[in-house]
Length: 451
Image (cartoon, rainbow, N blue to C red; front, side, top):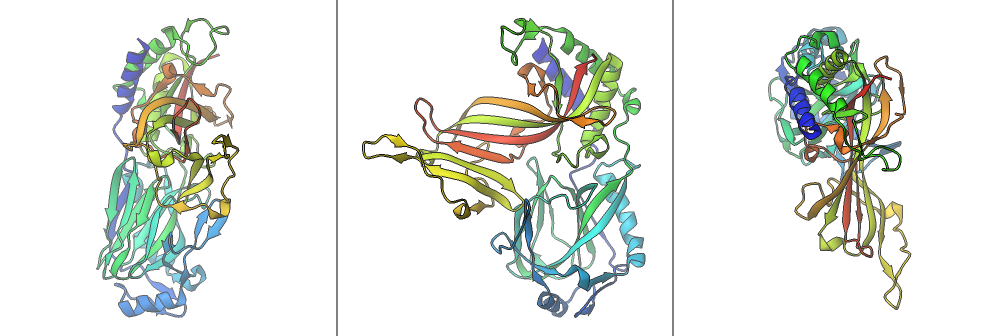
């Protein structure tokens, strides 16, 4: 009964129309963008090759962030950055184009009308022939930052496509030789700039900051066609006894109704950028429907951050002699943070391995072993742990119930489309073969009976 109920709940939540996209693209006139760069002078639009070369001459190699570090590595990011204090924009003139464009992009990203979207200039970048930026995620650089706006200035260039990806869907922007190109996308999107093959790609990058949002409106969804049916399914979920999957048999009855319902949302969030008023795109609409149904059924609802861990059998023979290897997601790709090969004595007995020097461990643009790979065997087990909880009033803290049972989990989105934030490979250990574990982060809606 519960499996069917969870499936129906997922279908009802999926019936909410997707509010906007993870990325939005537009073009616009360059007439109101007046830029002057110290040492170069007023920038002509479209940008001429001669001015682009002058910009490169006064620019510096662009750095990138990795956790607390600011790094310079042309193998990861090879582009020129014009010092921010050299760039002057006639903001009064520019606002005539930028503000209406921000309102269009806000709607296309699925943000509500009460949201005020603003753009804070972060950098001016120049990509010449052969330059690129590997696949990465942007960090949160300001309070309320939800994403990035890239304004590509008109110029003649080939290659240099901006490719944005989320859950297997890609959006690509090539820029325009005559007009400004505006691309806005959420901060949890993976994106890259492909190598420029000819000419110069010049961009202004902005931090997108959202203010004034009120969060999902349960009352607005009370009349939604799916709300009453969802409330009925919630009642069925919490009144149907199931075999406990999260408690030892000696501490709980063999069967009991589930303690909670955990519905995974689509976007990823940091703890600092997480709240009812910070939900992105379709997450806000689904939260509104769940809140309305929970109110109808008499249950409490809250927001949570969750970590998902999947453990697979691993069949790739190249990892047979690895003792342990751990990779973690960083801004510029994947960093190997721990690595050690198996060590054996003269009798062939395994001894304690010596870890590799952390300074010698590589950074790669992609994982050496990825979910969905043909080298992965069967899924051994999967766990979900709640790490942070926000109630209806906005009060936040660690959840009192952390583990999520199979009978409590509901999602309309397959985990196979999620991007892991960590991966760990372990070699053959006694009776166990090679294993590969992947960790994911997701936001979730939590429904529980009222105390």
